[in-house]
Length: 227
Image (cartoon, rainbow, N blue to C red; front, top):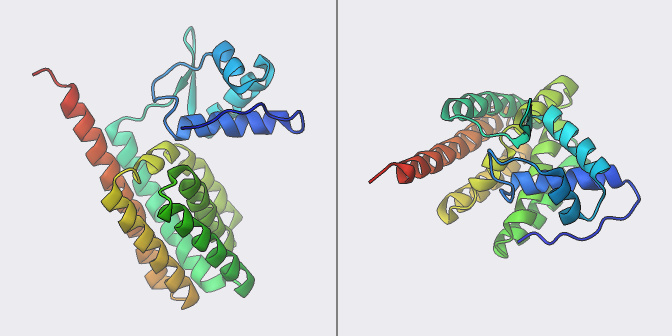
């Protein structure tokens, strides 16, 4: 459960954006739902101005659609959209991992190990929200270690479309455990500076998430069919 606390006036637009993004990623605002500015302003304890700004940024990031005469709608990807997006992000992350294994510094590797330790602590507590936040930091750090700004920008843009789905992919206990094991494999490959191994692990990691998400979508669609 997400507890909403009134943000400080310091950097209010950014705080509002991050809180609203979390509501979308963690499914509190369901895909296909309309974003009501008044209700969100009350929920986040802010005026409607930072809400509007946050919605515009979320639309630019691909998490929200701005539809004429309907307003802002939380993005709901089709099955094909999901498959295509995961296929693209798998190759982006594979290449990123390959470059990171070649270029990562000792300092960056130490920082990644610290993030991995924190993420494992969140996993042990079954704190999915904290786990996902640290998980994303790790993927971002790997992209940064690849030392290719264009690749990092593409990753950020494409990954935004499926953040909510990546979050959901860890709600299955067995699949979550597998994802944790894959993260340890990533760290081992980076330590060994084994670029081929790192690329393989990264691609498989993302494709496994894609398969979990498709299973979830297909299961939900089956449940909606008339008896």
